[in-house]
Length: 180
Image (cartoon, rainbow, N blue to C red; front, side):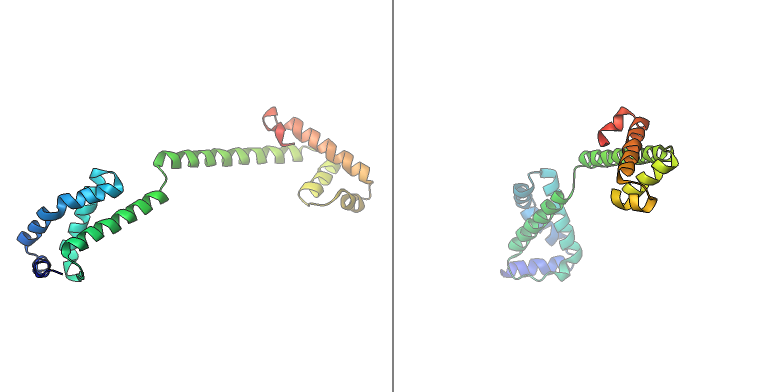
């Protein structure tokens, strides 16, 4: 590390504006060019470099130089650029996020509407047919278990389920017929 760097950092730590301006004038443009290599965005690179200068001004007393001041600045720009690129990967563009939210909301509303229609269709079934259908679909019972519970034949259970599905299918429009 150069003695001039130590002196310059000490002056900046003591809030010497001339020393800070000297450092700014000396490295701002090269640091911006360096940031542009990573970000490919001039404005973003300039903002990032300005943030580093602000950090240096506000927290200069927390900086321990092991390299030259120039090396420290370029390393800081590199690290911030990499952080910025990493954060960008995590973020979806706003248009894409809105499309996903709108699609999910529409799907949720459609599913709620479908669920209400199916429940309404089930309530409209005759009592015996409704009971067999609920035991089959909501109770997850086999046809044999339903037949044993209701003291009817397996064929009767199958016929009731078929009847229920036809009535539910007719109750719902053609829009939802593909579900059955």
